[in-house]
Length: 99
Image 1 (cartoon, rainbow, N blue to C red):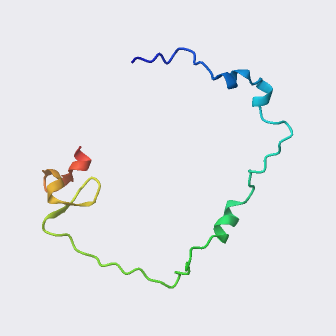
Image 2 (image 1 turned 120 degrees about the vertical axis):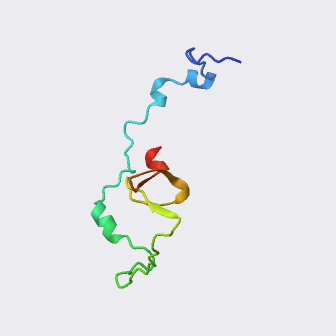
Image 3 (image 1 turned 180 degrees about the horizontal axis):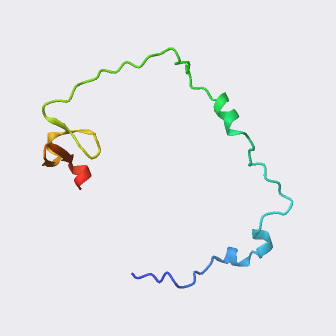
């Protein structure tokens, strides 16, 4: 069934009967949902549970490039050999950069 989206919509009888003044927000209503806080103060006050990690060191094991991997000369990321798009003068490029 085709729908004509340009045709005016018929409103339900309840909405047609309401005067425009009743639909408008009240003039005397005050807005209390506005929060006026400094973002810097919020960031200083926010702490993660057990967040004192200043004395911790990150332990990461560095693995050298494997025989089936290559470094793309465009994005400089290490990819698997299956993502090799082209090799020119010893420079290898991945499928993401050549795509």
